[in-house]
Length: 461
Image 1 (cartoon, rainbow, N blue to C red):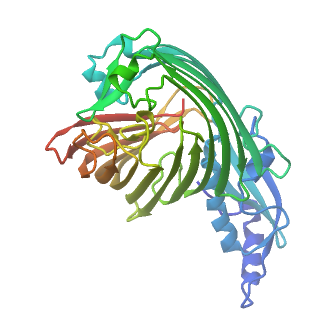
Image 2: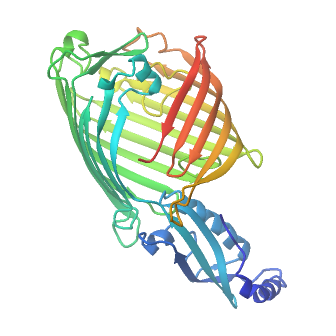
Image 3: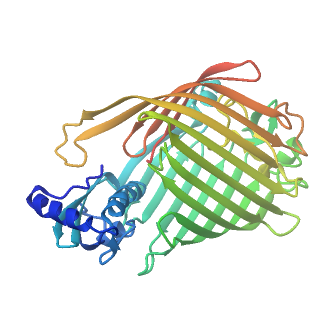
């Protein structure tokens, strides 16, 4: 919410000022005075002020200041630090205006048990008979806004199907200018079951190999955010991967050239731009990023990768929205080992309606179209004595969608969905709540004449 009205005590004074300011062809600008912040029990005030397009002492016309309020609210909500942000004019002192920012902070500490199927989605887990052997369980400790500077600390201890230890610390504002930051992280994982090939557009596993697959990796990143919306990242990482030597009998190209282990550094540059209404579930605005990475430097591992994505959302009416997203990826040389060939079906890179399949490749693109209509907006009381968590908000959207894509594969061409145009479509429902929770229920069809119901869940835990 954004309020651009002065408090009632100052209404007469503000009316006279605005009237006198507009008697000339060029209205006299106002000067930003005090910026009062309320509700930030943990977040440092300067972290909040970092997201504002104005600062104390700036001269600005009133319409532009009100526009700046909406930008400020949008930026503060996209930090994912707050459940609610209200910005208003507090008072006028001549041509000086004081601004009030009221925030409701989220809970930042999540020491929670972890229980999750390891398969790519719930439909894949169903194909495995909902086997409890395919569940990871353990403990995830996440501390967002660790020191009040929007930094994040993660420590994950996972066992079950996969044994995993992960540590990461992200400090985006490491200096006084609040433009430079860093990330450090370490991951270890071990798994006895190995996805060694893709056959008939399906992952094929083997779980009878004693040594399984093991991975160690570490990274250190430098981040630079000069303004509000653009962020640069340079990452240097090192990984060591080893697999049971007998995997080469099943797929000699798993690591390439009958190798059972590989070590390599990776250097990555990423630039991202965010100008959307709400980053976890954008309906309007632009969101884009581009990445160039170099993995390895010799015959054991040698890959360049260039990728990019862009999303644009439009409001077609008060409750009607259209979104367009494009994603592209290029790896070269085209001849790569199996582990470097993943394209569609992994993470967020998939066509809605082809979730049952994986499609490998060295180059590919994806286009998504979505029409959304908000059908419900309500909140449910929690009966918790808390100003920031007394209600749980919900927004529900009906969705019509269509996707198209293509994946080029030079080496692994025995799968019918590679090297051909792909298209899907369907209808769905999106349920959005706080803490970036998004539940998507899709009924979709594809060019193979198949149709089905698919469930996707995204949250911030």
